Every structure is written in C-alpha cells, then in structure tokens.
Image (cartoon, rainbow, N blue to C red):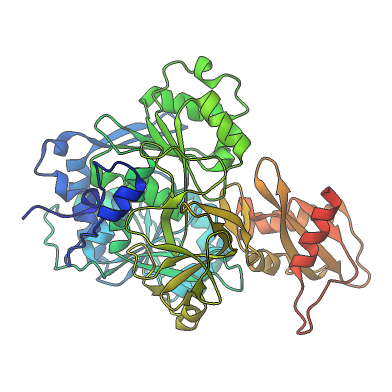
Length: 558
C-alpha cells in the first residue's frame, strides 16, 4: 500500500478555497512517522539521489546532502543516540542554528521515537536551565561556543547526561556530563536501523511558549502535527518540481521548523540552510537567494521590512527566481504587503498559527486573490471560529480566534502541566489568545492579543521572563515590561523600573540591565526603552496593570 503522508492532504484540483474545504478529508494512518514522511518515502524513487539540503555559512563552507544521505546519516545518529541511552519518549534538546546536524538530529529523533526539543541558540544560561530541567532532557546538542553557557549551570542539570557537539570534538571539561562530537558519533554508528512500530499519536516534538503568564509552558506535539500542515502547500500556491525553499527564520521557532524543513521535505522539495553569526543583512540574504535560485520561503515581517531598505531589489538582483513568499509571526501591514507585490514581485500570502496550533489560517492566491488586511481563511481540514464565553459568535462580532481541538495541528498536551490545559480549551475549541473577528466570507481579521505577549522582530517574548532577569539587578525594586510600537521590529521592549531607596537612574544602570538580559536570556529579549517611575498601576490583588502602561504609551504617541 502506498504511503499516505503530508503530500496527500491537499485537494490539488480545487476551484477555490471553498471547494477545497468541502472536498477535504484527512488521511491519517495509525502508523504515521515523521522520518518516513520526510525522508524514507523518497528513498525508493529517483529523489533518493537528488538534493535535500544545501548548506552554506558566513565563513565560506558549503555542503550538499541528498535525500539518501540524510536518510543514512539520520539512521546512524539514531543508533548513536540509542547507544547513549536515549529511548522512546526521552527528550533530546537541539540548541543549534540552521545547519545539517540540526536537520539530521530531528529526523533521527523521530526515527528513534525520542522527543525533539528545539532551543534557540540565542538563549542564555538561565533560559536553558529552565527548559532543560523542566523537560528532563537527556542529551543536549550545541555548538562549541555554546558550551560556556552550560558550565555555570551544570550542577543543576541532574537529568542531562550527554552533550553532542556539532562542529566540535570530545572533551571532559564538564565533569559528569560527557561531551562527544557529532561527527565522531555518526562515523562509529551503523546506518542499519530497525525502526519500531510507530503511531500518529506518539509524542514527537516539544516546544516552549514565551511565558506570557508565568514560566514558559512546554507544548507537546504528536507526530500527526507535521501531517496536519497542509497549509504549507496552499500557502505556496502548490509546491512543484524545481522549487527550492529558503527562509532566515530560526529552526527553533515553530514556524521556522515546520514551514522551513519538516513540512517541505515530504514533497521532495530541497531546503537551503544558512548559518551566520552576523546580524541579519538584507543584501546578504538576497545574494544567497539569487545564488542558489530559491523560489519560495517564509519571510517574517521583520525580514520584509529589512528587504524594503533595498531600492529596486529586482533590478539589483536580476536573477532572482522567487515566485512566492509567505509571512507569519505577526500581521503584515497593507503598506508592506503592497511593497512586496510591487517591488519584490512575488505572490504573497500570510499564514497564522501559534506554538500550540500552527499554520491553520492563511491565503492561497492561486485559488483566491487575498485582500490586504485579513489574515486569510481557514485552510481545508481546519475548522476555525471566533469564540466568546466558550461559544462561536456571529460574523463581524469580536472574540478569540479558535480552532477545533480535533485538528491534527493542535497540541497533544502541555508538558507536565495538566492544569494549564483547562485555560487553553473551551469545549471543542482550542483558544489562541488572539482577538479578532470573521466576516461573512470566512476571512479572519486580527485585532490584538488578550495577554501581554510582545512580538518583536518575529519573536514572541513573554514579559515575566524578562522581568525576572531585570529584578536580579541590585538597584531594582520592581519592574514591568511591555511592548511598544516600533516601525522596524513590530514592537520593541520597554521596561518600567522602580528603584530601591538611595538608587538613582543612570545610563550606566540601563546598560548593565540590558547586558544582563542579553547574557541570561537572549539577544532579542533586552529592553530598548526605559522609564523610571515611583509607583505602578496595580490591581486589587496586587498585580501590575500592564494594560494601563500600554495605554499610556499609545496616548503619548497619538
């Protein structure tokens, strides 16, 4: 029997989205496996010897891997992980950027039945400590320069037994935590791997939220999560032979990983990965896209705003083969969408989702020309509603954007946090926390967030985690963090500080706090604006009213 996987979930000959929705039927085999769908399905076809992954870095290294090579390397690494004591249901943390080892590790985990935990390389020691201890990860993959983050927290990681170093060699500098090079492990392992019986409901992927209301929550996805991403095909106006995918989006982000790797490979489409230690440079990106002939990709709004700094991009880069660009993470303004249409000259679609349920609303301009303001419509197979008080509301009414909980892209559970599940679901609906409305044609419009999440440069930042680091400074009595409008980043982070008696505001103090947050959390999570205040607006229960602070900022800019 032919394999049923992601590529079979699209209605290819639909006349429009309504037709595709009416005819859609999910085909979810009980024994579905992500590694088989992404790689193994191609190994008995002519795709076996075609490129699956192109890789380049800013130091001049370039490599190419076929689907057959990725298959063999992932089998070897699955055997290596097994030899390290990793079994079904164990967590393997992947603290790596876009590079071949990252992709191979994901496929190996799914092959083995382990749970992959992507962690952005931007995170510092404290952010790593929380995620590694909460997940009880047995193995951490990282680059040599990231080892110094583990040294100060190694004694607080009782479950972590092994470091696997991508681009490095064995070492014994962390005592009881062994260090072994990825290349060394793979070279010593067999490429014969007997995969055990798998199930579409097997846990496969663990990703952490931004911690908007307390500590970040671990979102556990079953293998079917990948199978549910048929929006990938619709949003790129149907994937086709000759396509090459590239996105600068971090593979540790749900959108970057699913859109940029796991939901692309089932179609036999190659992916371009680029690793750079430098800040995003729009010219470097378009040079790369032109050099390799990339045709499609996820370009978050921050990337599009950076590209807009290039005048006449099609004249400057005349050999661009880009045909379709999708944007996510936050809504794209009509003005920016018009620039993409007029200057980048590609089909442009938006996509919407979140860590708990990704990629279920969007546009497919091949079937239906989108207007500028809506997020789009529900992709075929995904039932979406605007919900208030647990019930769907009528067209035009405001409520919370929600997706039926039986959609395959909806999470399996919050990791070790069953209490949080009650707040996430209302009956049959999974609540996104985003406020919007739907018109009578089914277009969904985003209006705002019902919590305090900050969306900056394509990243979602929870204020609680940033505030916890700021208050570690000995001069700070209390603080609150909000997002304020920023033309380039969408939002930038602003911190309100109340200092301890005897302390005085200063630029030196601000610089110390910024550096502390950068080192402890991530480079994109530090506040760029500060305000010193004597008292905070408070609720009757003693909580700071961030909404009042945001309203005050909006009034200043009005």
